[in-house]
Amino acid sequence: MKKVVTVEQMRAIEHAADASGLTYDKMMENAGNSIAAAILEYWPEAKKWNVTILVGPGNNGGDGLVVGHYLQEAGAKVSVYLARERTDEDENLQRIIRHGCPVTTAEKDNRHKALKDLIISTDLLVDSVFGTGFKPPIKGDTKNILAFVNKVLEERVSTPYVVAVDCPSGLDCDTGEIADESLVADLTVTLAAAKPGLLRFPGAGYVGEIVVGDIGIPPSQKEIATINLDFATREGVRAWLPERPRDAHKGTFGRVMIVAGSVNFPGAASLAALGAYRSGAGLVTLAVPEPIQGFLVPMVPEATWLVLPHEIGVIAGPAADVILDELPHCQALLLGPGFGQERPTLTFMERLINPSAAAKQGIGFIHQEGDDELMKLPPIVIDADGLKLLAGIPDWHVHLPGQSILTPHPGEMSVLTGLSVTEIQAEREQTALDWAAQWGHVVVLKGAFTVIGSPTGQATIMPFATPALARAGTGDVLSGVIASLLAQGLQPYRAAILGCFLHGWSGEIAAGMIGSTAGVIAGDVADLIPAAISELERG
Image: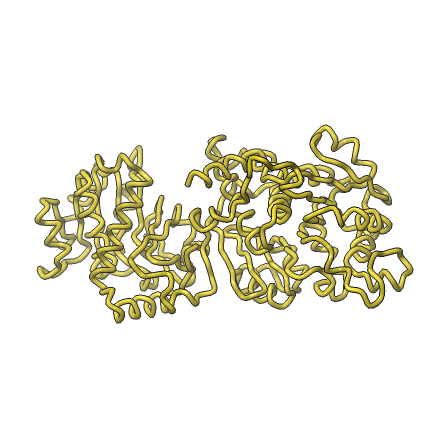
C-alpha cells in the first residue's frame, strides 16, 4: 500500500527526509529514475521512441530532465522544450545537453514553430511543467504554451502518449481543481505518495492510470508512516490472496450464505452468488423467497438453497428463524441484494439483527435474555436494499457483530446518515472514516475511487474510476466477492479492500476484452474475477 498525502504533508515528509540525509537532489534523481522505469514498464517499446520533455521552471521541471536522461540512456531519442530558461548551473540540464539531446527554449521559439514540430513527431510527451504546489489558473506564457500543445494534439491523426510527472500540470493536488489548458495524461507517476487531487474530479479525469514512484523515502519514516489514508496497489493487496492448498476441500474455503432477491429483483441473488464463487468460496447457499427459487437454479447450479417464507414475493419476517438455524454452519453472511423495501422484509431484518426486539415479540430466537449469542453470528456484509432497510431500525449499528461490512453507494449512504449526496461526495474519505468510527463497522463507500473506512481510523482508496462498473448488478457482484473473502478467513477490512480491488480490476479487464466500457455488464465482471486474481498472483 502507498499513502495519500496533502501537498503540505508532502512538503513535511520531504523536509524530514532531507534532514535525515536523503537530500532534495537525491530525491530528484530517484524520482526521475522511477518515472523512467515506470514508462518503460508500461511501454517497453518506448526505448525506441521519439520523446519530448516539456520542462517547467521549478523542481517538477528538474524531475522531467532526469526522466529524459534515463530514457535517453535506454535508447529513446529525447528532445527537451523549456517553458522558461533554466540557469547554466542546472546540472540536470547540463547532463541532458552533454548527452546531445536537443534543447529548445520557449523564449527563442518564434510562434511556437519548434514546439509544433516536436509535438507532431513525438511518440511520448512528458509533462513536467508544474508540480504539486501549483494552484490554478495557469497564467502568462505557460498558459499559451500548454494551450498550443493541446491544439496541435487535437490536429494529429494519432496522438502520442502523455505522461505526467507527479501530476498533470495545472492540477490543484489537494482539491482536484484543474486548469482548462492542462494536458490529459495516459499515465501519472506521482512521487512517494498519491495526492488527493489525483482522486477527485474534475482533475481525476486528467490523470490516466496512477503509479506511485519511489523517491527513496522509507515507509517507516514517521511523517509518512502515521498518515491514515492509503492508496491500494497490486503489491499491497497481493499478499492477502487466500492460499489454495492442493489438499483442500470445499470446506477449506468456507460457506457463504447469501440472503437476497425478490420477485422484482431476482437476478441480484445470482450475481452475488457468482461473485462469491468466482472469488473462491467453497460453498454458496442462496436463501431466497420461494417464488424465485426455480427461476434461479439454472443460473447458479452450483449453489445450495434455502427456500424462505415470503409475502407477495418478498422475504418475510419468519424467514429469520430459517436463516438462524443455518448460520452456525456458515463462515460469512450477505444480506440485501435485490431485497426491495417492502414492510415484510423490514420485519425480517429487525428480527434477524435485533434479538432484544425479537424477544419482546415472542419470536423463537437463539438469543436469550442475558446471553451474548449475537456475537456468534458469522461476519456480515450488508448491501443494497438491506442498507436502506437498516435505516428504519433504531440503533441498528449496535445490533450487528463488530466490524460488519456495509457497502453503500452515495445514495444509500445518504439514507443511512441523513447527509446529502453532495455533502458525501465532497468529502468521501472523511465521510467513510467518520461513520465507520461512529458505527463501529467497515464502510465501503462505492463510486469512482471507492473508499473503504475502518472503525480503527484507517481508510483506503481504490485506484479505479471506470464507467465499466456503472451498471446495475455490479454492486451485487462486489458484495458476493467480499463475503467470499470473509468466508475464506480474511479480516473484514482486508476482505473489503481486496474485494474492491479484484472487482475494479475485473471491470477494467472486461472493458479491455470487449473494447469499450459501454458494453460491460455485471455478469462480465463476475466472470472475469478469476482473471483479475490470476494477474494479481503473477504480479
